[in-house]
Length: 136
Image 1: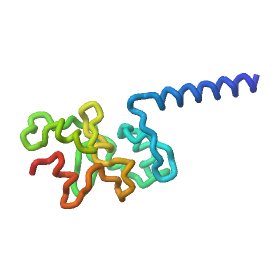
Image 2 (image 1 turned 120 degrees about the vertical axis):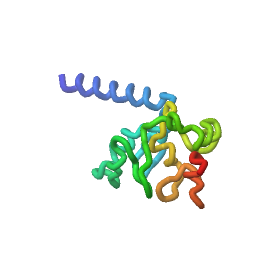
Image 3 (image 1 turned 180 degrees about the vertical axis):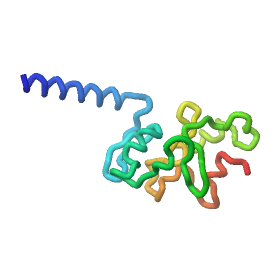
Image 4 (image 1 turned 30 degrees about the vertical axis):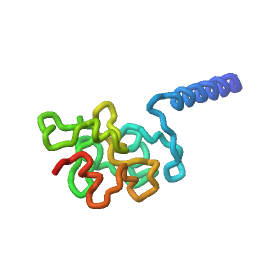
């Protein structure tokens, strides 16, 4: 019975992994010794960045992710009613900045394929990362 349970668990895990790797959202990259989904959602990032396996960014839970000031996560881009202060979506996504179903998430500002500290999606010299979206 144990052998059957083990085989069932192994087959299930392999099938789940195959589905995850074929998912259009899956883009596996090495990140500080772990294989992670480079286009994961905020909850994926917080699975490790909760202080247990990686530096806590628990301030990102809920409404704001703090850089030097508060920044919304899991919110629509551009903010409804404030479109005039932001670059058009097609211009923003033509860079390395990604939106998750139209929302700003961790991967909007962080590109895990970039080995630089904090993994900026866009070179941040002179606040270039911020100015990719913010017109002022």
